[in-house]
Image (cartoon, rainbow, N blue to C red; front, side, top):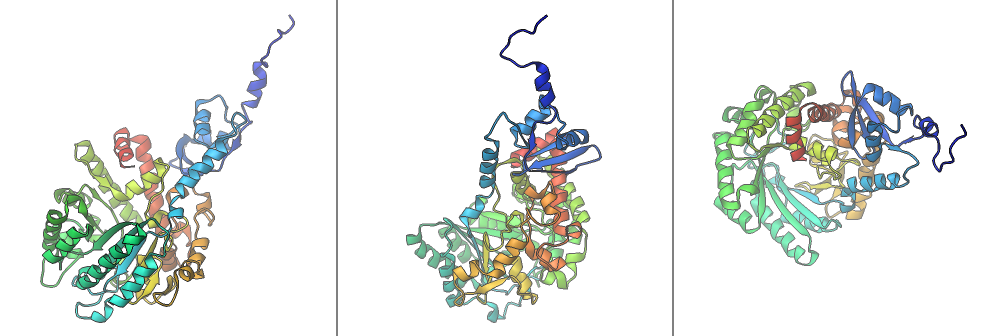
Length: 488
């Protein structure tokens, strides 16, 4: 029987091209477990696929009429002749992810003093005793810092007062706030002020000024009373009692949403993940940021920075996260902020403002630090490193170096270029790279160069461990996934 005249080709013609007529868009993959792979595309969208599917995909043997192929195509993992817009859409998504670069530097930290009345065992700063006023920022230096700050083109400016204990030089805080507000009458930037304080020296005068100028308070709370007092001792006083009292007073004066707290995980914290979370809930917080110790300042001198391994911290993190998810299941809304940052990069088209999870690194181009002596540093960790005698990330000095010289100098551009995660060994092939950063300061400190050796990098191990755990929960625990997606 002769073939029918038809406008359509025979089915065999299409079946033949179903095996190989597609191209791979930029993607990376790595095992999640023995049976599954995490596959991510250029902008961090991810899929968890069986090992056999991944093998077929990369060998161009995946059937183009399969459901998994259609999902891969819709999420810009593959490209075929049916559409020419996929690359443009992928480029648009990437521009959205990197939009933080167009805003340029928006966070400026003023180190008002190195003086502090606490003796925290993990302190990242080489603190000084209360009577050493030589370690205070001067009014003249603060004025230079304000002038330098307004050279940034960012439409948003966040001023954060750091220490030592920033309230021990409160007159300088008062001067900077007033000077910035006066300058902003013509600059018209979106302003935000934050005072980082342990709350020990807090007075009604401080609170009145903060209320008048809408200043946020950021403090430290390490957990229940015994743990907090062990981690953050204060001579002659109960550090925990002062902190809790200060939180309550600040909330009454400023509003419940104007006070935040951070914790740091010490060796003593590792056995108390549930208790630490419960303390935050009991004190009326709706979130916690689980932080490991940073390898700077007194934390190194005291040995606290090496008291536990990254795997121990990850066990602590997973236990705390498990408890937090259970709280949410029981109707107690509570969020883990470090997870929320990774989830935002994983599940949304947006970037985060968190310096440690940016590539190019957020040092300098997202945040700058003005030290008490006028030194300009690429990050808070950079000036802590300088107090240890290493000035690698000292970008310049107020009154000597211009904004243009600082921001285009080799001291900033060198580590930024060298450490871009998209191009450095191992990161460039890692499926979790879109969720990570580069942190050249930490790698320089712990491994001797801006890039670091990834198999032994604690930064790499920590971020990869968190991302893997979150992906497992998203894939294997529907109830947990519902909670986590809400955080993103």
